[in-house]
Image 1 (spheres, rainbow, N blue to C red):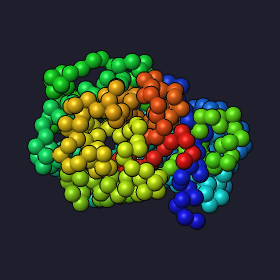
Image 2 (tube, rainbow, N blue to C red):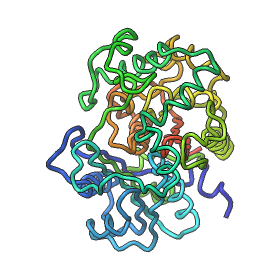
Image 3 (cartoon, rainbow, N blue to C red):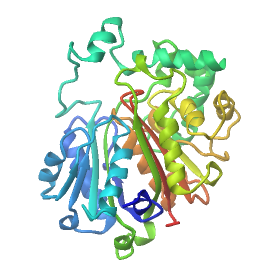
Image 4 (cartoon, one colour):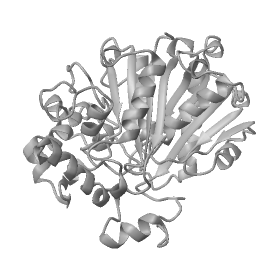
Length: 387
């Protein structure tokens, strides 16, 4: 089997749905966010759950998710590499389908990130690498751990906190019309900078929202997709890539650039047989305002040091030539802790023509995820045309 058998439009997303509600959901447990999203995605695909023979998830085990749904799969994947797990799981599902290890794969996500209902306690062992070499120095949460690389990134390029604020402002414009978005109030650069300080250089608006939410995907072969009620809404996988680096942020290979973004994106474009000019729409994982800047440069859409101007000049905003994070992203739409599923969901909506703020004539979407802060990356090239 070559990677082409899992790419090039041979595998399709035929079902996609988020939970019926997102936001603050103290009445819904983590596992029920998974099952709610799963049932909605299965219905969206127009299949019976008995056809599902593969289950993939991150967080709870696929055993638990499958059992809750009454599915007895012959293939499972519990890959857990943080927020980009879902990009990797789509890629792994495609490989399983291409090799006939599975025929219909359900990929689920659910996280009670805000209400913490049915969620294991958070903590790191004192003997772990992060417990020994980061936690004693105050790097106890993403917002405090990310400060080291983001300051190195800004210094290397001469960027300012205003440049971080421009990312927030640009993405908020997409969220304002979206009733499901957590942050919808108009904001300007001065407002972002005046928000409550969190950890320098971040203010509150430069940090993601914290929500309860879930999402799910149904993935199968393009041949099977043709026979489904959802056939005219299928979204095809053209290319993908993934990679990892260090388990702690301070030990990145290069503080101002992330290898898994560079390598994963390169593989995704190569396997898709497309160039950056072929991409109509982009979803960048944006737990914090600096990540879209890194991603623009590392994935090759702009050159080193050009990302801040790209945002400021309006290219990523509604009406811009490279729409990015078109539901508001993790900064304004939703972020349950692992955001990758929601980036994929919006890419699918755009490619189906079903987005709240629809970009005209979208045929291709590039999705880039990050996991464990700067620990892992996953890249997808998706299209509403098989290729």
